[in-house]
Length: 459
Image (cartoon, rainbow, N blue to C red; front, side):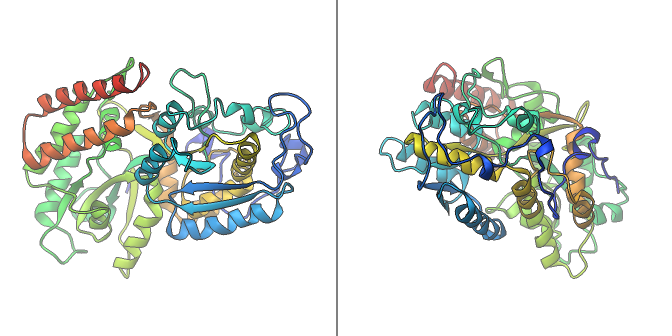
């Protein structure tokens, strides 16, 4: 089976597993707990003292991630020199948290730190729910990051959380992921293929062969090549893979040929009987891990769930991995990930929130978090134990290798959260109810741009 090489410049300096290493003085890094307890004497944070402050953090992490996260928060609470207390709580999925924030900002019923995708934090910012500029804390001489520390962050991750005009930072990156194509390598081999598809034609051929022939690892007669994922990130990733985009020059372009071709391909695959609708939440992932579906498209953050699902279903797990979406000219990866935003509060609460975020994104905490969550870390210095991590989880190495190709990001504007629902609905309707793809995508483009205009001139 084909395996992708490791990104030379990035992977050589990033590692994801224990043991961790101690940051030493010659690195030029200033550990958060060694910043001192005296308030800044000058600048915008002069006299601000975070001592004894209690702050709340709304996140979406559950299962093993939450089980690990809670002791990590307790470690901060027990050891930080300011006596800051962080109260972290799982508030549901991203959509649940978004709705709670939009409802809570006018009433003040909000946390101090909130997980948010860039378009969500843009909406909070427009609603007056975030500080004027988080860089007040990130760049502060006393409490912020110095030049060496900033340089330690992957540049594309570090600069992702700004308003559309670049005037203000509204979030900070704790981790990142990629949209990928998961595939059953054992089943592909039985069908006579020695590598996953690199073109949509190959994808369709393999999906139909699997649907018709099945494979030895699944006893049922209802195999299907692919359960079609219809969310907005999937549409965007498909457009990127086809050499296009869904947003260009300040306007949504769902009617672009690249996007239309991707959606049309999936509609045709469904109509040919080689793909099906997703019947329930995580149904596409479950179909893949059960061996019923040949392919699954989703975030690389789902790697541990896919592995555990396969290991639970099979005494001897089948071979599998993750790769790029099939593409037209060159592989393109949709890179995304929720950041954390500081919510508008007192200067003391905002500074306490930043100090926790600063500590959480230090190298040692990053190494621990990456090893448990399987998110990609955001700092170069997370560099001990890479060989062990890759050896224990080779699919993670394959996923990390996808960064060697071109990467793209989805629109980072406030209206995108609403537009995402419209995009999913349009795709769902085309699969379930039929209709002309070009017409539907043209109508979606009009709707998306009207929604964007209803927010602000910047969306």
